[in-house]
Image (cartoon, rainbow, N blue to C red; front, side):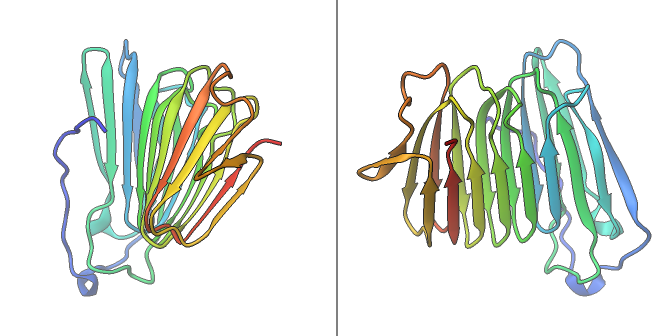
Length: 229
């Protein structure tokens, strides 16, 4: 992925984390003249919902109830390129009383490279209608539901990698798909694609208007890939 600005992190001991009233940090990023963007999300624990349909490049609400874990938002632009990075500050453990929920919408019009890191939380990424250029998903012990169903007009790559979590991937209809899984995968369940050696492909891979190349790398407890019937 393209390098991003340095990240501000806050290290804190789990014993010192104190909850407070529910708070919301607003995301509103709408730089003019943007022709491409990267969006990078780092969530150690909690819930993440991402979908399209935003009137801006990015908009949404970041809900939390522990002041020391206030989300860190980094927004930069360089010419016609924009970068958005959101980080959950580091902590030594997960407090039982923690409330953490990011709810984001992204633009369907601007070409986006999406990079999501999800630790012990759950991420629901309904992003098939976005103008995707690349997707990277990194799982810890959590679960990620990656819904790519939509109508892509160009090829793009998807990488799923990480720890012992679970990933569910839904693929779009009428789009060519090639899926690979390598190293340390606990369980692979693929439907709607044909297996050829160590890969799975749709019948129209390579001839469709748009093609998705999906790679699953190491350590995933379970991966479920659902192709369009």
